[in-house]
Image 1 (cartoon, helix red, strand yellow):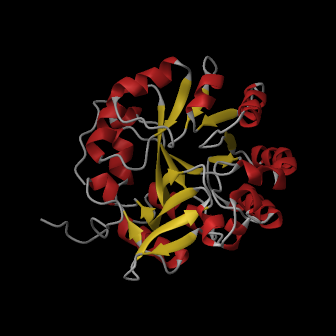
Image 2 (image 1 turned 120 degrees about the vertical axis):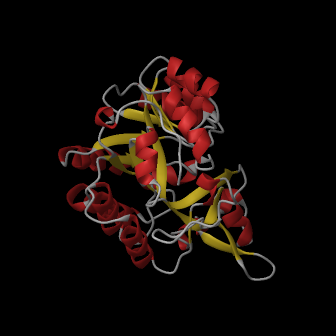
Length: 318
């Protein structure tokens, strides 16, 4: 990977931090509580996201648990970020964001422009669901109070470098592991695929806790569906690119939770950031832990996102 970098000397770069992103799937409450307990007690990550991003109908299952989860994470020394919905469709959802905005000690991640409007004027984070593709949009977000911005998944390396150079004083984040969200809709495909209406969905999205795989008519893996959300069929994996991303100005690296051992996944990336293992070993370790999945990094290299541009340690293609 050959990425142009900003002129900030390496000694001035802040130490890279690991982020456990929000859980995108409809996991059972008991499993979710155990997940966050393990992340608090065992995972070597610096930041943990909580909150529902995909479907407002899931909120009642866990809303009462968030205060205890947040307290436990904070006691463990983690910074907690509350992620908001990627698709806000009514006054109730806007009201939830307004209530969150009244909590001054909690960093809120805006994933929809309605949330950005509510949070304007107070420090907040802009999530990767907001399309920030150029320097003008980046400056607009910063002027409205954004102090941390997660860049979209589909950006190529040249665009990332330009955005980093345009905002040296703002924390920038990139996802480096997990399925990539591609689209979100007001309609629920999980319900429709099971012959149900969205209003009577029976929460069937919970039956596929890492997303429902969708194949082409020829039987080839294609995408995954998570309720309202369309995800990549492959798992993003950027261990080979993280050093260059950090030199460019990315200082937070997000891991998107799946039902594999996320504590072990976090350990691999921490060891990589600490120089204890190299990208090739990290790539293989991630594959071993994640199981029978296909890894990809195509977006960063300006090729189809589902492709793997190179395997760490192997020669790059001509």
